[in-house]
Image (tube, rainbow, N blue to C red):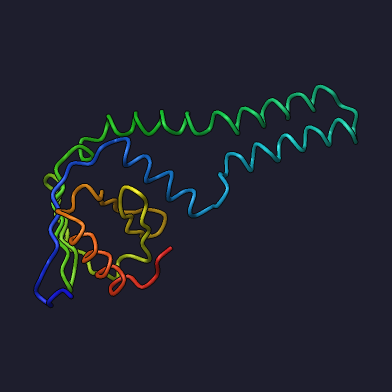
Length: 168
């Protein structure tokens, strides 16, 4: 059990692919089945329905092709847009230093410093590679590789369970 004054300190650089994977993980946790696949499926069904009900072959083909494109191309296009955003934003590539204690979470990313209360976060998620501290539609990502060892990971999970009661 952690004492009241003990803190957990992390120091790391984010990696583009792990952060993108965390974004996709959060999206999947929020919506269940991929929204891309849902929309694509609906368009394909509308294409079939327009062929059966209206007999409109051109509309049916257009809806069917659009549905397939949405289902198959949305993810790669989203990944490409994220890569572009990542390259334009130097803050993504700055060293992150984070300290967690009983009262708050202190962040330092490049020239930006903040000290947030635990209540800032609504929930948390744990993926295979890291933790997502969720606020609204956004999150702070903490890669597991930044923790010193399995004991530190266990202490952090305990702290999360105490401080952010809602785990998604």
